[in-house]
Length: 94
Image (cartoon, rainbow, N blue to C red; front, top):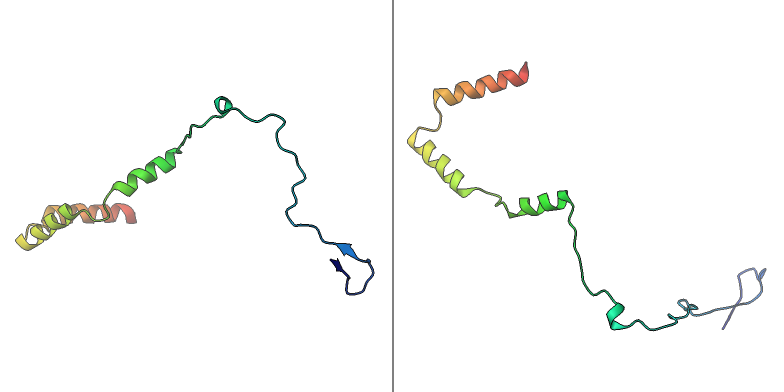
């Protein structure tokens, strides 16, 4: 097949197969004993932490139910808890 350019400045050019492999194979075939067939996986510390975090449930239902029960009983908001919350807020502002 011949392709001519639009202005025909370059003359005709041949088209070769786009994936023509010109390299030769190995001189000697590999023997099964020389091939390492073991796989290895190494995880970074960040990946290990992400894996552990994915195991933690998104919602801690035991904690949610305990707080709901405390609110219903009227024991969730105490003066001590309010004082601690106000002290922490003032520490952050100051």
